[in-house]
Image 1 (cartoon, rainbow, N blue to C red):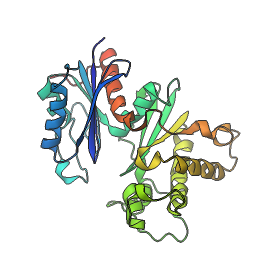
Image 2 (cartoon, one colour):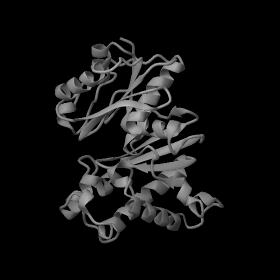
Image 3 (cartoon, rainbow, N blue to C red):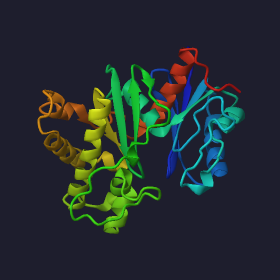
Image 4 (tube, helix red, strand yellow):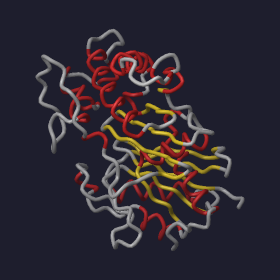
Length: 301
């Protein structure tokens, strides 16, 4: 089905909107500040009203979110720590105001699907996309579909070994020193009293960060065993950090199992996103397109 498709990625700081062809060529794009739900979504709707109406829209939203199509609160943000957004209707509002079918998923799932479709995961049977930024999350694409179990994967809240001598209590309001609580952007800011973006590459913060990221990444790789693991997010995309993480993953794996993925091929196994910061919004476009092409009608007005 030809036509233009819309993509929306809602983030803690900005919401990215895009209008793209079915091959992922972006014809219009904008970013709007994430403020309160009404103001933010008003500006998102205005963007699409200014251009040719898309045949469908995909949304990748921060969470937690309600993904149950039978639920009365499908398409809502639920128990997010962003208090203004708790119980906010996102997908139904976009659907009703624009009058187009809407697909709705988690932001990191959309990023995983974007990389699987047009980025570093093309041609592979399975892909894991790890985002390290304001939080830590993972999206999984297996055999062409976003994978969920009984619940959404919440890998940021697994427990990892604490580095000896590290006394930081952790930033997670629910679990303290879970993986996210020890290694997300706010945790770095709290540890060192500075925006992580301003920390120089040689700062000792990155050695500790690489240690924590490697521990969690090894757990994902051993449990899920994706064919490629893509590391994104504002923290994760720092090139010097990824190289540190690769080296530490090799050391932690310690030759277990005769696999080159954790040895000489780790540079092509543990990679940066090819779509960069647009993985999420392009993944949302791809979700809208593929739901429509498969006849799995997104939520209709």
